[in-house]
Amino acid sequence: MINNIVPIFMIIIIALSIPISGLSINYIVQEIILRLSRNLFLVLSLLIPIIAGMGLNFGIVLGAMAGQIALIFITDWQVVGLQGLFLGMIVSLPLGALMGLIGGVVLNKAKGKEMITSMILGFFINGVYQLVVLYGMGKIIPISDTSILLSRGYGIRNAIDLKNIRRALDDAIVLHIGDFSIPILTIIAIVLFCLFIVWFRKTKLGQDMRAIGQDIEVSRAAGISADKTRIIAIVISTMLAAIGQIIFLQNIGTMNTYNSHEQIGMFSIAALLIGGATVSKATIPNALSGVILFHAMFILAPRAGKELIGSAQIGEYFRVFISYGIIALVLIMHQWRREKEKAEERRRILESEGTKKGDDK
Image (cartoon, rainbow, N blue to C red; front, side, top):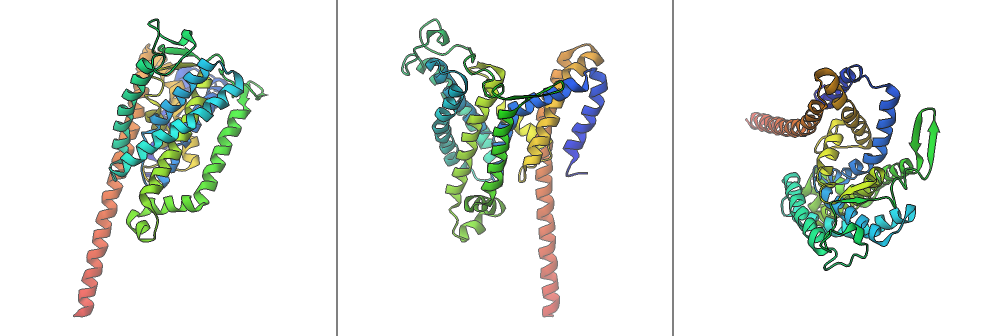
């Protein structure tokens, strides 16, 4: 019960909210399918740093920024459809790798404090990103499409219409089953990503990451380059987050240049934790169940708040409260477990020393 208290709590809230909201089951299921295809890739990008013992990577916002810069370029180049989408992914990968390299080097200097460091690093890089986009693009970086520039002639507009690639991946192959529409190509991309994670864990690099996650000092003694492996974990996570952000934004069809990436890390981590993951252990089923539960709450909370109290805004406040509260609860539980394990280890050591002294007498 303690290990699964978060998903149990969420299931109870959702079960109570369904009848109050008045929404049909068909509508809820279709919305969950839509949000799974939109968000699951981003949530899955968190798994590799957890394998390497680096905790929850709040730094995936760096990857999201790389993805958004790539989308600005393909919008300027007027590349449309799937070609534009895949070109955006290709452009985002080196940018994501650079961001990940910066993040990995910084996090190696803050071992044991990776989560808070990655969060603060995200705020810092966000400042650099906004400086580049607001002042650099159109002035230093050439942008030929004036429709995405501010009236002064440089700096990108607050909102960009992604009409060239809107739902390019989602609508490429759609399976209709009754009232439900399933974006097959997006689901295939997510399944391939899951298979990559399963395969990656079995490779030498994946085994090295797992060993580092269990005990970094023992791994070093075994000849594993811990710092290099940790940097690779963050680079891979950030590159995948860049692709995930592109999938996310092509589904929405509009990009808020200065804000779209800001809550990506927080909401993706909340979804993963709601699925029963912890700071030190997370699996693909955790990500899948977490996205379903988290976004079921997203769908139901505003409507339930409106029906119950007469204000949808109450449901919105509740949603934000749950998102941050779940993260706080899981981090507290993780620290409590660690303290408990340390106390148990100390007790065993004292018992073994007492037994040894008794044998010596």
